[in-house]
Image (cartoon, rainbow, N blue to C red):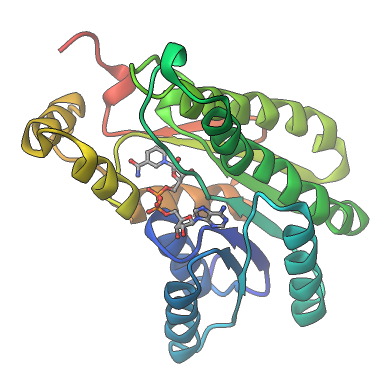
Amino acid sequence: MRLKDRVALVTGMAMGIGEATAELFAAEGAAIVGLDINEKQGAEIQKRIRAQGGQCLFQVTDVGSEEAVKKAVRAGLDEFGRFDILVNVVGIASEGAVHEMETAEWERILRVNLTSMFLTSKYVLPGMLTQGRGSIVHITSVQGLMGFAGYPHYAASKGGIISLTRQMAREYAAKGVRVNCIAPGTVETPLNLQVLARSPDPEKLRTAWLKMHPIGRIGKPIDIAYGALYLASDESSWVTGHCLVIDGGLSASGPI
Ligand SMILES: NC(=O)c1ccc[n+]([C@@H]2O[C@H](COP(=O)([O-])OP(=O)(O)OC[C@H]3O[C@@H](n4cnc5c(N)ncnc54)[C@H](O)[C@@H]3O)[C@@H](O)[C@H]2O)c1
């Protein structure tokens, strides 16, 4: 078991990449503190992990709220005593262009996608620094590395996560805490099913996604969870400040 006796806080654990990460980490021996706003689905994942012999505490938490994050971290510490791993998965998206976007929508995406990662880090780091050990993994996106039309707020939040990762890595490297991020390409999750549902031509969009990824398929949540497992485990003990791209070759390609 690669995470035996570790305690991991995973945000967005009710669906998609967060769900796959929580389940994989639990199977690898970690106790999970899972945060999500989806009460029903989060409770379901908690039940499933416990039924498989794992440890899991699900907390209904809006990660954009400082008070809620503080409370959830406290509950996790009360239950398991410490955190060794933090995986910040939550991210939301909507479509738009800068000249048409409501400022409130810009701020909503920045808050949930970027500020949330600052907040969870803020409350988990003191314990990690005291114990002199920790691994933090932020989920960004290839949209933080490359330009795609239609998502300026999302892309800005994802670029911010990459900068935050590097900055935190430098800040905490000598104190035993590593900080890395993962930039996925298109992954088959509820988030993307919603993007498809909002599209005027879902089939055309799906075909475009397939074409964008030279490996010939879009990603599965477990493709990303395996990367998070490597970065969370001691196997990556000399890796910090890195952005691990997991994208089926998307960012290695030129124009299609
Ligand atoms: N799916 C993709 O193609 C893709 C590609 C690149 C990056 N990403 C990133 O991966 C991460 C996960 O994406 P996904 O596709 O699994 O998303 P998803 O929509 O399938 O799951 C996101 C989870 O976050 C939860 N959530 C949303 N807002 C929340 C909030 N305020 N507080 C707490 N929980 C909240 C949702 O309830 C859900 O369980 C995101 O950061 C996303 O930007 C996804």
